[in-house]
Structure formats: structure tokens, C-alpha cells
Image (tube, rainbow, N blue to C red; front, side, top):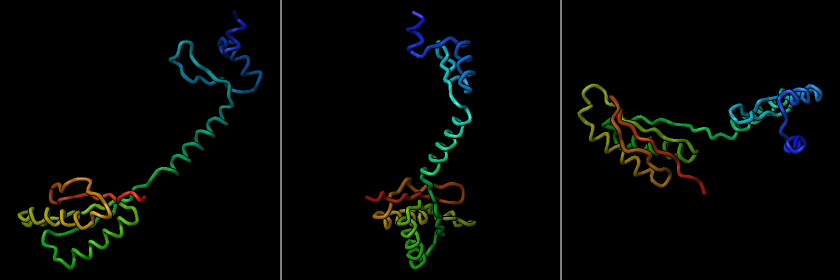
Length: 153
């Protein structure tokens, strides 16, 4: 019966420690809560190196989201709107998210509806390049929307 346990790779702790010493490797506890606790004989320095390497690869593969901001006033005229629209279009084509906001100074907070109309107009104009993530939302003195780029096929 003792031979059968060793064939499965299950070894008492004392014996495992002796094996690790003989092989000049480290006995590392993998999952301490298991019954019996699971340990592995490995070169710990090499294991740490491989873990760092994996984390570095994961970090390199992670998608970095760039957010570009475009600021409007509640009474932005048509030419300025078109100018900023072209910039937003360029940002979305490059794959960046666009945060468009209307900033209300002083008493211009009375023109909340105009600001909302302006942002919705922007979202509608950019419909073919990106999708609206949230409807215009007033936070303090600014009304904000986020537009994320459409996925390339």
C-alpha cells in the first residue's frame, strides 16, 4: 500500500523534505488548505523568474485605453462645433475614447438644455465612428458624455 501512494506522487512531509534536499531544490507549498497540503519540489528562484516573465507578458498584451477630452461651452457656435467634431472623429479613428463635456461658467448653468442638445448632436454626428457609452450627465458644473470607438472588423 505504501508503494501505491508514492506512485501517485503523494509523499509524507519528512520524506518530501529529504527528497528536496537530495535534489538541491526547494519544497514549496502550493495549496495549504487542501487535505493533505499540496507541495511541489521546484527551483524557487526559477519559479519566481517565470512568474515575473508571465506578468510582464500579460502587462504587454493589456489594452491601454486612451481618453481624449473635448470641451464645449453651452453657446458654442457652429464653426467651433464642426472644428471640434473633426478632432473627435480623428481620435475615434485612432482608437481612443472621447470624453466630451460642456462646462458651465457662472450663470450659464441656466442653459443646461442647450448643453445637452449640443452633446447629443455630437454623439449623433459621430455615430458611424463610435458608440455612446452614457447619456449626458450633469456633474457639478459640467455635463459629460463618453464615446468609445467602434471595433474594427
